[in-house]
Length: 478
Image (cartoon, rainbow, N blue to C red; front, side, top):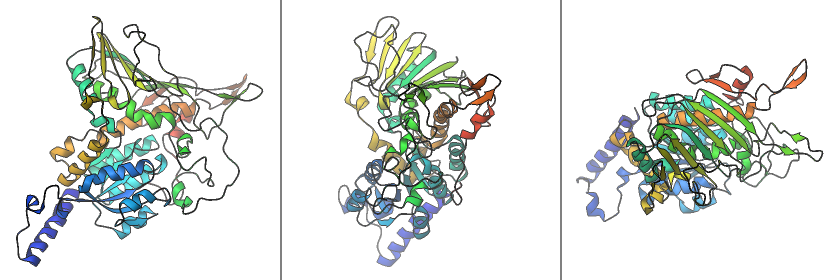
């Protein structure tokens, strides 16, 4: 077990120090205010240190709560800020070589593009390393199920990086719902202004010069091989199915988290999607199967549960599309974020509950006409550092500890949430599958798909199941 090995290693270090020095260990308060003893630090390896990975590294470090022992990134140019801030960390481009070279690592953060989350995380878990993984947890449904099961098998402390899960806004919404403020909820709307990167475009065919210092082989990792192109790296990988999970994968873990948590949702049973198209010069729709669509609309159906004893239909829209104002919400009220670009609406029998990204700006619009909102700074601040700090402290206490049980997005929650989001992507990717019949082509993917969550299978359209799991490149399987 990870907890036993960690405690054994720390106890050995402490006992060895006592024997060597012939003195007792000095209490922390004697060493000075704010000082963290080396024996209390978590040795963390960072995989992915550019962009979001840099802030993840700083937040996990948390003024010395952790020791950043190693930094691994395939693009050392993008990781330069992390190298500069943590000059004592050992540098790697291949996470496998890092794991071989540094067996004393306690925990790993994974802040890479979506397509490499699972292979890195699973390798760390097999070595009994605790893991913090950026959202979405994985690139496909199969990977999310594997990581969820592995967390329990290997007794690993886990957390997904949807920091709003640890925010006070979500807690406020849970309290309101549990008190019966809006009654049973049957309808949920979630929307985002993403993508804010290219989508619905043709696959590039030119071969630009490789970026200096970029290990493209390891960047591509388990995905289907393509040559380097700036339309993939950096950042724009989000809009390609080979690497990213589109707008829904990017923002779903932030925006769908509140209704999942508040309503106690599980695996959906049905999904149906429609997608926007970019039109060519002759006004025929262009479809690029490698690229995520420029906009989409998806509806997921969830069965009743103990917290919310009725069916729930959740409608997701992206590409700047959003739901219309329900009658209870005044016409001049912004819904969700202050600019309305992202948000959540939960429609219940007694009223409506809304929030913005990360669960901020929670509001109630009750059938009585009363409007309730929580405008406190605590509720509307971004809880990013706290989300990661709680994971660090839980890792120190170990699997099954009280702090571990208090984590808000461990894989037992984050895995099913991610599966549901990626099931929406399964429907989006299936939308333009064509079959030829006696009357020409039809589109069997453009229908309601029925989902067997326990067995990870669409039961009424077999071709859609190709998106449950990817084909892995040789040497990169889980």
